[in-house]
Amino acid sequence: MGSNYDCPVCLETVTPLCNKILLVSSQCGHFICDKCADTQLMNVGTNQCAICRTNVTRKSYTPYSVDNALYNSYYEVRRKINQIFNSTRANFANTPLYDAYLEQREDLIYELAECETDAKRSKIEQQIRNYQRENARLIEENNTLQKIQHKKQVIDIVKTEDIFYEIVANRCLFKNEPPSLIHPLQRTYSDYFIIDQVKLSAEVEPQPLNGNIKQDTDIVRARYGTLKQLIESDVAGGFNQKLLEFTCREKFESLVFITQPQ
Image 1 (cartoon, rainbow, N blue to C red):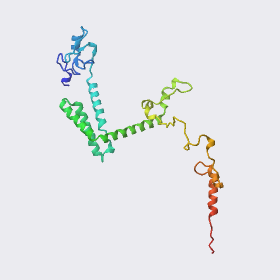
Image 2: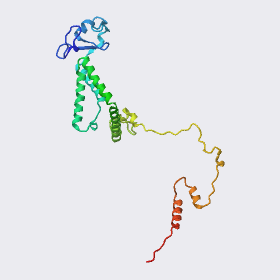
Image 3: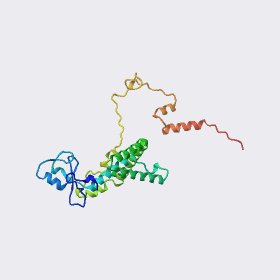
Image 4: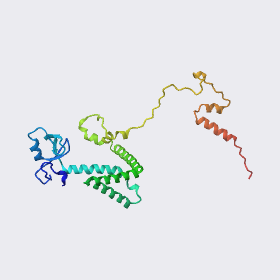
């Protein structure tokens, strides 16, 4: 086990095999065995922690699970390391290089979670900071790519499942019309489903480019000298059927066919 789990009063190491229970204070975070806690605090309201002299009560001590503490320690270390060492197979030329990278990452997780001296911990953390500084751009690119992939996966799942399982789970709650149901992923990642909408707004009324035009009667009416110009005036850019027929006929009539004698 180690000295970290020693009771500061009786100086015994509390292990899962002994007849004592290790307690931890929610006020200062220091340990004590259950027997010493009962002896010191059962008949008095408060007492001082044997290590930091903080005033503690018996109710502030709760059983300490070594397994849970070890799991939480590894979980936090792994989360921290994976945020920095976040490269994937696509970042490497071949699989052996990627496997070596994964082994290096696991070694760092183990060493950081199990280190017992501050000097060793400082050395490992400095190594991590150096890698983070040297690969800042790659780390950011991988983070962005992973967020995009995660968003796509969530949206695909919601599109595939829709609210089928929610209807099945709540089928006894409605008889005619189903209530307003939503996929749990859509509720958790609601920002993934926000559709950007372009809103057009103007603080003032639009004004014509020609300042002399105040109303519709001020607009100069065009005069057309040919039928083609008149047809084109009815088209707001592009062609319509009449204009296309007129243009084709005009081009066709302008052609001169020469028949070669046989």
